[in-house]
Length: 629
Image (cartoon, rainbow, N blue to C red; front, side, top):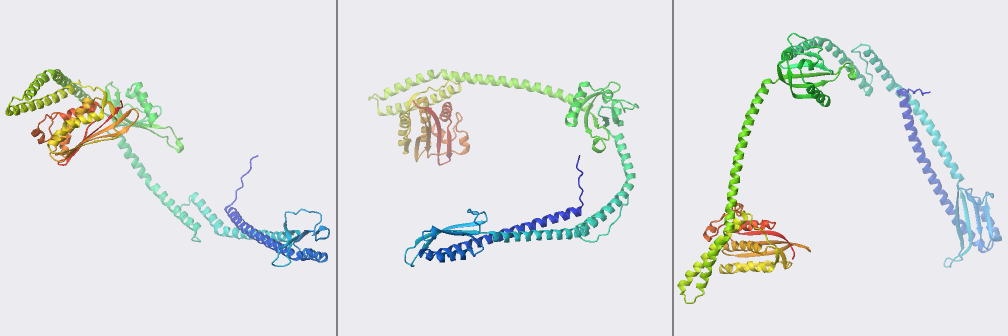
């Protein structure tokens, strides 16, 4: 059997709430008061117990020492005269039978929870400056019955006070709630009933300027607004009919096709522009299927339906329709679902609203544009093929040139070596005069310079032809650095330059590398530094960046205080046959040294970096990771 819910009025609920809050407040105050009172009474009881124990210790010491049993009995009676003393017990040799005791209740020997028990000794001290002697032990038991009784009376007072306060609050709050809340709310309810029955504009008198008075004022204002709204609805009915007429005119005279259909695709309405697109003439499309009227393929209709069901709408969908006469027609469709009318959507079926635009002319223009674009792509493909073929021919010619130069290296070097050799032999002949010796030295210097140029050109050709490969082998790294430095140290001293070598103490003795190519790179960098430095210093630094059991990473750095370079010159520095400074042309050279060095370092897995300031010198740095030998 289900329980019937109890409906309580606002007066009853407010009164009960106020009474509950007041009761909790009084109960909390009473609990705090009784707890504090109980703590103070128990503290006083413990103090009195301590004072009584002190009196017993001082008063019984002499009679027990002097074996004055009469005095002892009198003192025991005096102690028991205190109503809070429940029992006292003495034990000692000076007592009759070794024991003396008094108790208000002889049936129990253990203290109850409401009793305080203290054990202490009684010491006799004949003089203040002499040591005391224990003559007995005492047990004092105090009762808290008097304190408990006082606490009970306090709690009873609190309960009575709580009952009186609650009754008073209930009566007072009930009267106040009835006067301040219930009566105005009943008047407000009566006003609402009048408005609900059609008495729009009804008013109620505001008696007080409180929250309920504010509510009555707002209700009066709402009643007036309802009256005004009713008047406005009556006045706007003609405007609604005129608006509907304008909408119907827009629907029928729109240049785009507009239609409405139910969930099954049957036409509910269709404007004149759409019927003309389909060539229906005077035939009514209402009730007919859209697929039958438009001639859309079944697969296209399924695709449109799938998009509509998934997204709730479809936009800019291009479809090919067929008119009643069979003429093809391209249109652009925009449609969406409209929820069913009525509360909760239960007043009818949902429907489809859509608009179609004739894009047949635009489709024709797009087809023409596509044909022109395809023709343009054919022309571009033809030109691209011609350029690719020309590029392949150029690359083939360049490779053939490189292969020719690399192959002809022996033919270039052999006659030049013979010239240099015979020139050196002639210089060794003491019979040749000094003037002829100077001419022979000039011939030898020119031949060495020519050999250096030929070597640079052949190295660059070999690199471009892809015929340069590194030949790794164990290399004495310190000896390689010394050889590179010895080759340029004499030229530096002849120019009055300070030549310094900074070798890291941790530099490995032997590594696996192509020593010839590494020496060539260092020699190129040092030669350039000496060539373009007229005063100051040239320095080679070889440092260890990382070192483990199998590999090391080395950092080589060549610094000079020469002519330096601008940022624009640095950008062209490593290009083949590029001389970035006018001094290069004055001092000679092909501009291949740095380009070859950069290519060789890249084959070693690194890259030469440069930092330079015009007029302040340059710094060339590269790092190599090499296996330990």
